[in-house]
Image 1 (cartoon, rainbow, N blue to C red):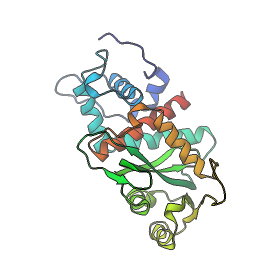
Image 2: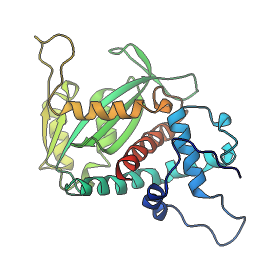
Image 3: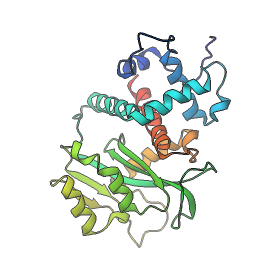
Image 4: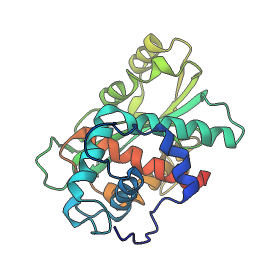
Length: 260
């Protein structure tokens, strides 16, 4: 296979960071497609934003690439790989592997007609889906969940945090925006993590125009990193699992570029 050189291709140092966490080839059956080529194709897709069937012929067949992406999204491999790289990225900056503080927020994106479940966000006047992100103070994703756009902030946060908080034993501080105001949400988080302190960072009513808000700018920057990948500018996915998988793919790419 002739290999073209794209800006999204993995260099040797980047491939060395992730290859050990990928599934081993089976001893029986047909020879497996080189997983480095599969990753090159997936990273090309998330950055270029093209349809599966428009994948350049330099890559493996699109059905093969899609099979691996779907399998890794469903099995949680992409989330686990994001966790491994996040730990390494934090260590290189002198941070502890487990964060003690995090920021929670959501982003509503317009959906293309794809047959998947979507909703209408009246506040943003947008029909699509809502991405809920929990990030550390460096902006690295701790967890992600995708829900219809009409999902209330607190309900979406509960979908995201329920499986996450029991595992983040070091977490002591959580910054949120005004959508999570209220004693009920703070009390609910303490049922999962009793020592977690929830602080609401509100926008001042007497300030007009753009203003950087303490701590919340961190997660806003992460949303900016995501939308630098054309696959994530809009919601093209039929399933919420695939939509979440692309978030992890984009963050894996960002961290790989920082690490090597």
